[in-house]
Length: 392
Image (cartoon, rainbow, N blue to C red; front, side):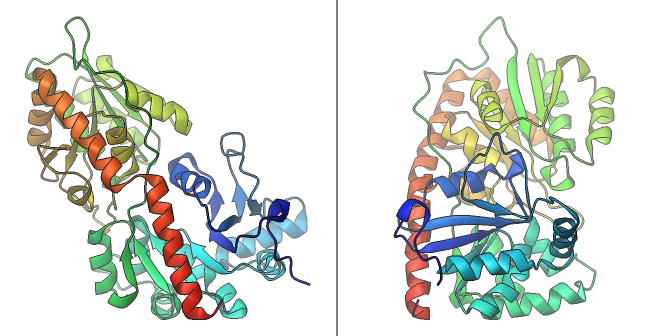
């Protein structure tokens, strides 16, 4: 008989959150989402578990290898997305619906959806649109192209974290009637004490954070920091993260003469990253569209900084102009324009009143449009809708 009651006798309908790994630090937003369900009982189904000490939620089922059989199944899941253990778990636990947390996870959820006959919701967050859609100038991967059409046909809802991504998904064939913009939210902390931007006696501190990949635009960020410093502003800078472009970024920082003011703390636990953001005078988000078409939805570091009242300097990229307004809740510049980014940093460092106003405006915008509790409640309303339509 299927197990239809959640842990501890929880009577709420179950939703399976499908994701490859639970959880890289860069995906802490999934843990926040998981913590804010109220009317549905979520369970994460993943291939492997990471950082258990930082993300200890017990509602996670994984295939972390424990012997030859598990190694083989984990390899099968990595290659095809299918796992007999996950399929059995879904049947036994009687999940009401599946929610893939990324586009590729949605493609890989199709066999489970077909066998169970339950609704499938998929969230696209940025990189996955380029991955499933194919690179500009290249033919899409035939395996993904065929399954992309099937995903759009079989999914009950296709969620995008920005209207910019939703338009791109519609151009790839997602039916407009199934597309929704879901503002993946952030927790809003208690108000911080009034900030003093760049007081005399210490440098103006700027933080950038993210994976060291092309779309983050950190090359432009470093150029902007060097030009702001050349204007006479005393700066300190922190670049949090790691990734394939780290050697090139370190060489660029050295060539720009930033070594003496730069800190490279590597990958930080989410709470440590939040502390770095909260202590900054400004957060720089210089995102760009990469050569392979990869682009952001709305960078989480922007939302986390703004939620803490930290002024943000960012590019007019992807969903960023939907999330914040230039001159009110952030200072925005065109992509690949280090001079404009530098000018914005100098304005904030030179004008404490402007910095406070931008920080307060960013926080107000996050409360208005991105508070995590309201966003997950909206998600649960959509779950109700697709389950009712499916007769679940």
